[in-house]
Length: 221
Image 1 (cartoon, rainbow, N blue to C red):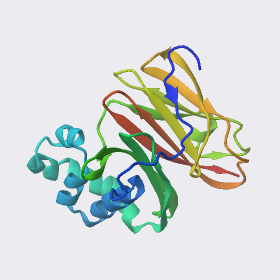
Image 2: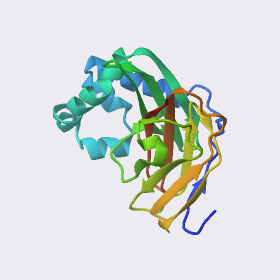
Image 3: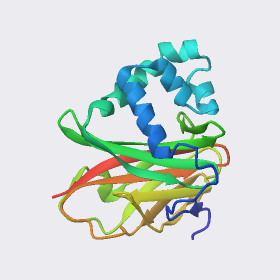
């Protein structure tokens, strides 16, 4: 691993002792359903405490602002055709990542989030300082040839600690480099042949106190 890079995860699930906790994927499904209903209280309760402070900080403020934005941006996935969970992973004892994908507004789309493990279950983490940006072929939407490499740019205020990527639900080893511990590019070879059709790439990154995840769709013609 190059200087300044974060620890890289190969996206293998970590078995946690409390089997009663919902999985990250189930928590995301509940969050998407709440957005589809326009249920601001359920959305509020689905958020981690730090996310509530960032998007509120009170429920009254959240209900009048961020809840409306989430319902507009995420709610459409609740009614997406053939919606399914494409990533449902526990990264470590604190963080998880989940993503859903399906056809909405006649286009195949995906939505991914980081989730924080709490005593009450998995809570969605939003509004933090970690930013993820697709790099290279997978940012184009449609490509004529299967990408030989997949990459994501990660930016954050605090140093980046972990980065993971999943292609069509399968994690793969990463390398990374950058200008410093808060500005890196992580990249790796796809875990298997990327054939023609639609594919979903999910990326996750965490710092000491926060995390973020995103999902993108690209098509090989």
